[in-house]
Image 1 (cartoon, rainbow, N blue to C red):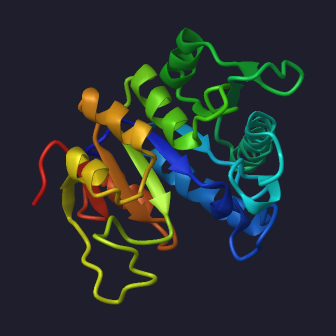
Image 2 (image 1 turned 90 degrees about the vertical axis):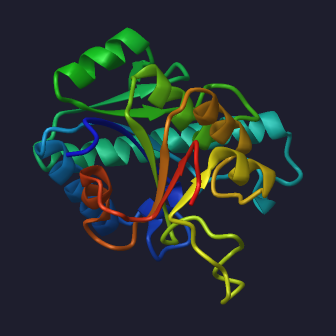
Image 3 (image 1 turned 180 degrees about the vertical axis):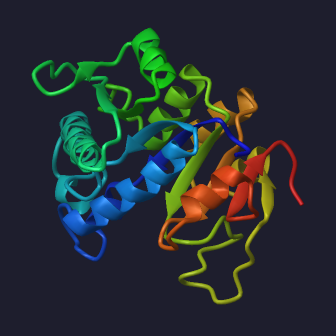
Length: 238
């Protein structure tokens, strides 16, 4: 394996699959199987799961709601998804812990960095829920922050497309995919693959980001093995 410790960022929509809302149990089990495959190969895995399949702070549903309240609801949605992933992984005999940045002691452990590092050292998949506990910060930013705190080698972000393009490939057939792209280009061209604050945090700490297509089974392992899957966001570009 090229990377020994990773932070896997999943969107909430990835757990919904072809549903517009909620959880698709079959898809959650499939994702857990892919995570187990990488974990069994000896990789330490931290995870951040979004909450967009239940509620998104900037969604139309929240348009007339106080933004802070909406973001708090989004944080709670990430806890629901984290618990679903925990259950699916435990059913496949993978040791796992959920840690949350918001206090829900009957549901999950509070996030404490040293405890998180200990879980990873003991070969437990560790799922970080509740975002950063602060409104106005996305789960992308939470993923970058947790990756740095657990000393991950890379952030791997699962998306619905096979990398970073110069424009939206779903709207523009002539869009060009990057094999590698610099942090600065992502920010300057507003490529939108990840929140600017998350990209800037990774840039400032030289933490690479790999963006790949989750729809193709086995891609998580291919990325971790170092195959040319998706787009690498780093210090230099093609």
